[in-house]
Length: 203
Ligand code: FE
Image (tube, rainbow, N blue to C red; front, side, top):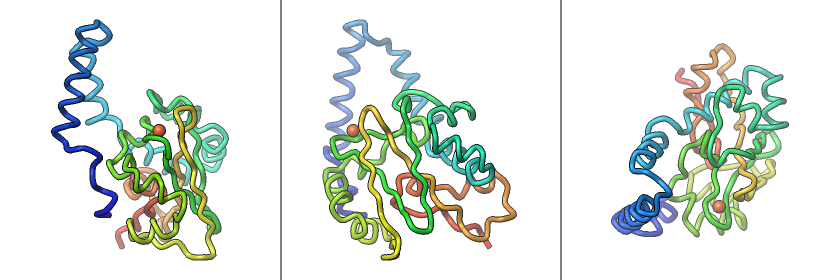
């Protein structure tokens, strides 16, 4: 993943910009320091892929919930108390034996925050955004070490500020006896982006 992991700017540059923007918004009365701190705390500690993993585990174990999730992801997530900014219109695409899905935002970095948290740096990098669309099989294999068999079609979904896609990965083999919580522990962030599989159960 080395090539695509390179940040767009140095951490110092990003931090300086964010601080300047924050100061301006506070000065203009658009935000308060407390609100900024609270937002940062939420996305650092509370919202992340563990929430998407809960949704996936429920879909793996409850076919009716899965149907609702595929019909209206935003509403189905709300059933589990999961909602929020950048998740107003989410669409879940299902991996099957014949179709593998991956997500991208070719324009910028749109991402379903309520279920995955903030996007990783490589997701925002121009290299990933351009190449995953043109040569998804190659990018998955070379950048992520994830080989998709030639018999499986790869579909790449381009998120936007209106619609944010994420992936319902296939349930790993050998997990028949596992409960929802154990299953959720196998659901990785990358599997919900479509650049990796859900983890195999410990044998
Ligand atoms: Fe975007």
